Image 1 (cartoon, rainbow, N blue to C red):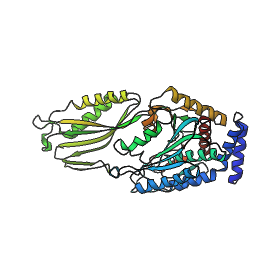
Image 2 (image 1 turned 120 degrees about the horizontal axis):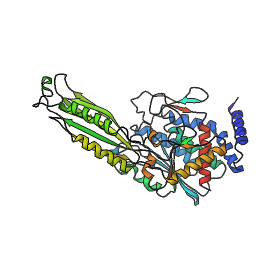
Image 3 (image 1 turned 60 degrees about the vertical axis):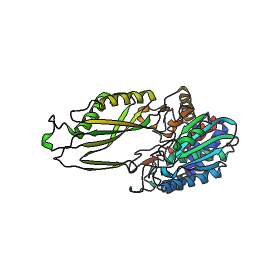
Image 4 (image 1 turned 90 degrees about the horizontal axis):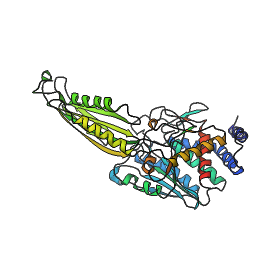
Length: 427
């Protein structure tokens, strides 16, 4: 069956199973299906550009592709640059002005976790339902869902007088430090009433009304350098590595059962000489088996649902760090990252809209995900200011890993749902 006949067949199925759609909404669905070959071409184009966060040129190149699409839709576009010292590409902003319906803030990101020094995987169709490629679901697929949904509305003259801002950040996977990185993002979001984020969908029938926040911590332990034969003796002590091990195990014992709280030591270096390069996320160490390590550094993250939970966890971690083994000392520092996105009544109403839209399309009910199942995202920066819903992007598997895939069978359905949700919110 060729693509035109397939689109017609799918449209016929939707028409039979979506009796509650209005005539206008059926036209929107038809536009999505008719334009799907071009939508897939756009997805392939952006996936085939490496845009690891630190590949500034690549991120800007992907941004330029989407900027052209937004320009064609009549949006006013701009590139928000970051200070050169931040070593980040900046952000793409596309704005459409109007007074009809809710003011929307649509969130995507241009970067991926796949840097230039990693093996590159182009967009490849594995079969009728699956494709692979770097960032294909996290979140270039979600970015394309936004663009394709807006194109379907534009094709039917339905963007007129709507207020929609699409904001594609360039460093979601590895955010730049300092308030400059999200100052403009937050300011523009606060002008809106509803934020919809198109991070990876768990599947077609699950959305996110809450997401955990993320912060980082750095643990340093110190001991007395000496011959290994003296370890545990009162004059020598336990050394830095045993002290780090004590602390990490105490974290696990005391905090690992708390709901929605996780803490992961992602990098650990200990020995006679230790260095950690934060910019490159690399550690170097020199040591010998017969020398008691005088220093250890551990880098980790802390994920939480609310600010209160974050602060309580930090207090417990500080108390554990203070209980040093003999002959050692330790210190821990924390750095804020993304805040949590707590569940709210407004968020639940948006989930109800997604559920109703899905049912009207014949796709079945939509439920909300466990907040602990998702990490942090850009939407968390603005969750305190407006109603929010996330997980509206492409579905797939293996995000952040070689072989990341997208579910191409769900992909057009997610575009249809996004288009109708945007339409219903802006009436």
